[in-house]
Image (cartoon, rainbow, N blue to C red; front, side):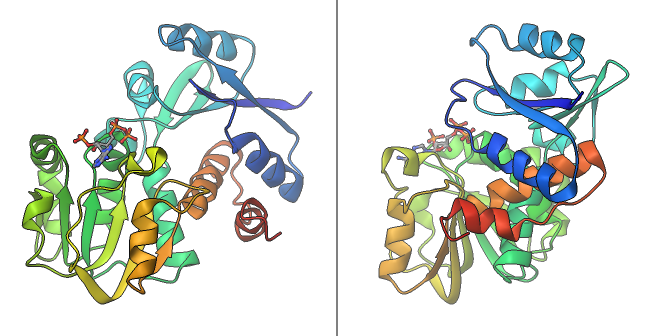
Length: 275
Ligand code: ATR
């Protein structure tokens, strides 16, 4: 019988994860069945336990349950501990271990696929929600020059930066929180949109003149040209959506569960309609 995996969320029907993992399984010759589980907002725990008790081997967790998953698992591995969010669960003898592969996915897409080394760059990260918490530690581990977090509600950026203070020295010139209105005196090499603004065709209130010459503009939202990406393209900046991050985080989950690393390039091309 195939080993059972699933992505659990609300909503979840639109998820690309079943397609991605089916492709990884085909590529590596692994026999897995990967489905979606829709959990009611108050029914996450019950659905996870039901899946485990039915012999499930692992879960991906998506919106809005990543923080609840962090609370539910018995142990945290890798970047999950500081992220406060879990997107991958591995069941080991009935115990649940929680991982967070989102930040690894982002960093691999930027450095390996887009060939843009993060070390020594001035990085602006927009947003201070769950998506930002998930990528802070992995981004800092690449030793940027600075990492500045901007958020519409400035207090949330301040708390987030305080939460990651212990990693401040991973960045050559430290980390800080700033309102959007106080970004104009800096130029950034890498600007990452971790807000949900693009989902509703909105854009964070970014000043006009903060793009360095060699800037990369990255939106974690996938499959669409968000207003932020359009803004970047209109200024001649290089830009990327979150398709590569999505596939890379899935590949890291597959590695955690199965011990082999699938090839991501053909799957990214396929999702972009190029494969
Ligand atoms: P996620 O888990 O995807 O990060 P979240 O925790 O709801 O979702 O956080 C959404 C983030 O997008 C927040 O940083 C939010 O800013 P606020 O904290 O000020 O609410 C940001 N966001 C959403 N819409 C935005 C918009 N139109 N402009 C700027 N920021 C926006």
